[in-house]
Length: 93
Image 1 (tube, rainbow, N blue to C red):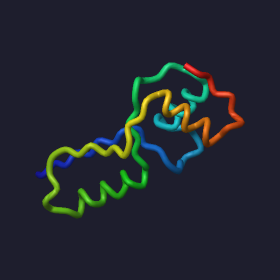
Image 2: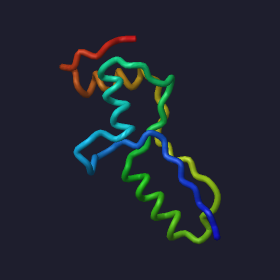
Image 3: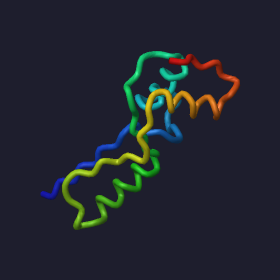
Image 4: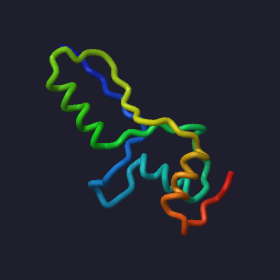
């Protein structure tokens, strides 16, 4: 049996369910000024789905794959959200 492991960072993108998932809950924590990690590794949910399909369909796929598009700090995440939503009163840390 050939095992292929895909390890995504914080998965962001369109939600399929009406409730927040773990990664979306992170964004809520940033908006509320709650404690977080020093840095975050993001990947789009559609890229994660594509990676699963590629790993399944490619017989030479083997081992572990880390799925991360970008790594940003907590303050960079706050700055990005402030630019996207200037009407929000985000806390500054």
